[in-house]
Figure 1 (tube, rainbow, N blue to C red):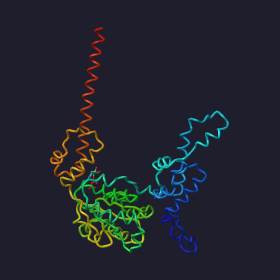
Figure 2: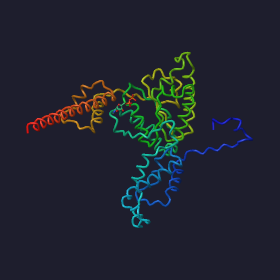
Figure 3: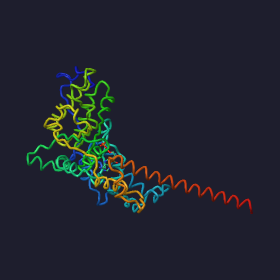
Figure 4: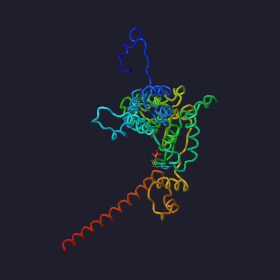
Length: 374
Ligand code: ADP
């Protein structure tokens, strides 16, 4: 609507504006019911739970979810159908049943269209994927996950949950990871914006970018907005210098949006920075990023846990001594440890390939010699 000539939108011309929004959960359930009418379901299909997880899906998306699930169940019995015959026997048709698994697979394929421009993810990081950081985890569980998950309790008790939380700590300590875990565990969507991206992606109209991000988050609520490298978007206003007022305008827009979050439940902003000292103070006032959480570099115990997490799915030799390894990895951040384990795995693959390659080469050589001898 913003692209229309304002003259068209004034009273006397198009004088009513009706926004047709993205459907909410009950709306989605109704749409699903309509499009799955008459579909043969198995008993495990629960439209309620599908409606619950399809934030940001519009009617057309839900229709294609139903269609895709049906196509999947069809494909399963396709081999049994003789396409040469003019009629398909009723017993075969009766076998078509759409299962919850079909729906799950369909959901993997269909991207909600409301969420396309500002990229919205549905992360699947579990709390157990994060080593150490117990305090931060608990704090975030209480102040974000609970209000998003049990919004009714919080409104009954008349508590306004925090709107913004600022994570600060050295790079690679798991700030992004933890923000993703919050979103995943509260069944929320996740928008991740890097500060510098905001400045470059919407050149000359970064405020519009901020507006767009919040608009999308509202549509896709419950939603966690993650502003990484917040210091680059919102440095102290005086320190931006006189180059341009982009920073200043951006901060103002961010403040406006965060102040306006009151009436939109289900949107939480998590900021991350490694320089909390240079963040604009206005952002740290109550009602904005009013909680500061330190994400420290891991201690020995945490290092061990992170090692364990990253080694869990890898075929690690029993001789690997976790304690010794942790001792040597002193001072590593989570990202360093992840890189360490990855490098070790790659080196193991390299070894394997060289050994096996040489073996086959030798064999070939031997065979060759034998052959020529005979
Ligand atoms: P930050 O946002 O603080 O710079 P990230 O969250 O992007 O750091 O971390 C980068 C990677 O490092 C993660 O994807 C993860 O593999 C690993 N990592 C960091 N911290 C942890 C942790 N506490 N537990 C497990 N993995 C971690």
